[in-house]
Image (cartoon, rainbow over all chains, first blue to last red; front, side, top):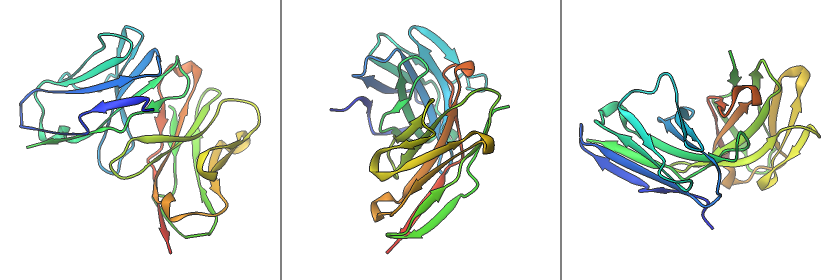
Length: 111
Length: 114
């Protein structure tokens, strides 16, 4: 029944060691988003894919990259995680600019 | 610039009491409005949304919200709160003119006391 799935739910990585977070969806939505949410803060949009078109937010660090190999999957790559990148990462999907549906999130810990 | 304000960082209500969470927005376009709820360590769950039409919107878990254009508000209400409603609530606003971007409020943490 799951609609937006994120794996893993918890990820521990070392300072500077690349890490990839995964998102998949069964809704066949054409838009997929990645958000970063730090403790007690609102989600912050990093980037989104509208179909195959990648849209980066102006203030998203170069350290964060994304791939969308097909409609169902989207990946968030953090090339060299720093301590400040520890956060909850949320994936969301929508059909065009309609309602966004969120996954359960991946909690990233950087040691 | 677009902004969303949730004036209350924390709210505590007694179980069974009524609840109103406030949301005000500043937008240069006709807004789409959403309320999401987030339990600790979880993602955001959509409670309700307003795109057009009837300004009183019913959502899941007994929540409702009313869009008041004159006040630029979209307050969330529930007549009788349950202990399981304790969570963080986010108001979010989008608009067709701004593409896919949602602007979130800072969130309101709801505590329910028995």
